[in-house]
Image (cartoon, rainbow, N blue to C red; front, top):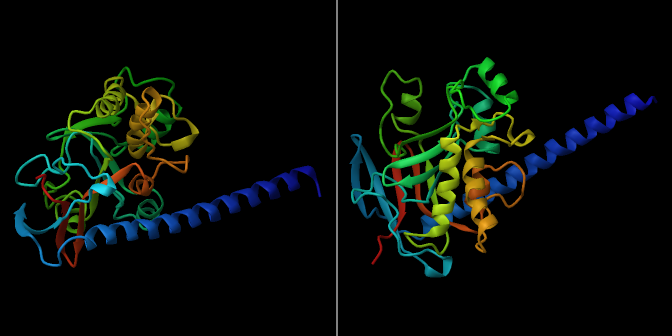
Length: 296
């Protein structure tokens, strides 16, 4: 056997092991997330606390009692009294559903292994998020090999600042994904918050300042994930590294990527440094919203 053949066999063996290992981790994390969601929903009463229409669609709201032993503080979980804008400053919005519902296999693969999207809430109705949607194949290739920030504004999608539309029904009927998501952003999402934090918390300021600098510097979207992280971020990576800056500059530990590899949506949900504040799931076409009880 030549050295080349032996090397190729070792590479193939390593790749096979890597794929099998990654799949095993994904299966394990998926089961844990389902358990975490089930436990959170199980803390609520079986009957909805109230029913409210959002975008002409009924939402069943279930109040979840707070448990201080879990590090669940005494802050609101919505930015508005009507409970239509999820999260407050410093909260993280996550969805497991991919942005490609019409693409066979890709939709399942992204949803299962990585998750669909993440955003950092920066104000009462504002989010910062890294997004690569709308980029052409040529733009993706050029962006992946671009050295430095997007100082010339060449690339169409990098890090964006936008209104918090995670519970709004903003898709029109001409949208190709209108039926799949009934006009909403996604059929399910979860909001999480770092433990034992205050409303005006300097650690939250550090995380938001980090993400804001990336936005102002016109950092690139990272289509190649861990292969090159300089000047670029993908959605969960931006959130994870923003809070990693807290750990780097203070004595407060916030680790949203505890396996140290590609930061997935499930990684953040399962972090021991966060807790769930809101969980929205669509069951048989009906939107159920589980939320931590309002502060006393």
